[in-house]
Image 1 (cartoon, rainbow, N blue to C red):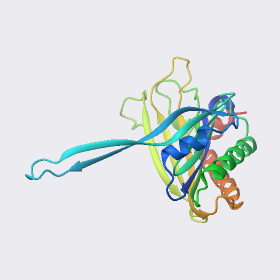
Image 2: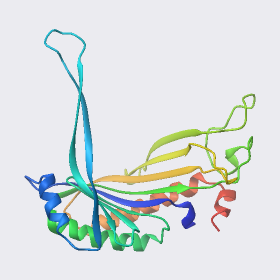
Image 3: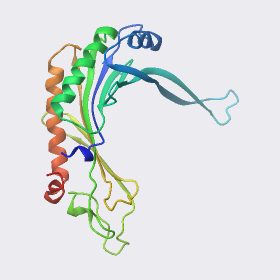
Length: 243
């Protein structure tokens, strides 16, 4: 898989935090470490809702936000780590190297995260690969030349496609893992190639101790599922672009 066509690859792990852990505690613990990463910014989550008024009039909208983690960059700017109260994510920025290197660095930083924050359980694991296919499609060409099962334009409609969005959630009936599969084109590029995003997010629920070695076995299976999904979507002509 060509590195130029893979904007991002990541591993994501959801956890149950230790009792009483707050953002202030996370910030103090992670911010004081030296492990090849520096703090870039806090991570915030927004919460929205509606508040009923005493007089029964139209409900009032309410919103608030809270800081839930830290975004860190590796000193060489190749990796981005998200250390959150309820999870951990490591992203490899382009150029992508290989799966073994991504897992190796994830294990290293995950050990730092678990040693400092002591989560009690791992509840979900995922791996996600966001590909930019850069297809040589001309206005009016069918995208079916490169992508299986993409909804095509009706024959009587205008044939030049400026954008599209198609999303599925798939279930592997053997492992019960799921895949969020997204195909999207937001805007055409002046380069002559069409930047079609193929986003494959494979995930599964778990109930593991943070040090359980099966975590990495599950991630390996999810990577295989991701690969199977990716190569089932692209045609032989599209695969040839990666050789």
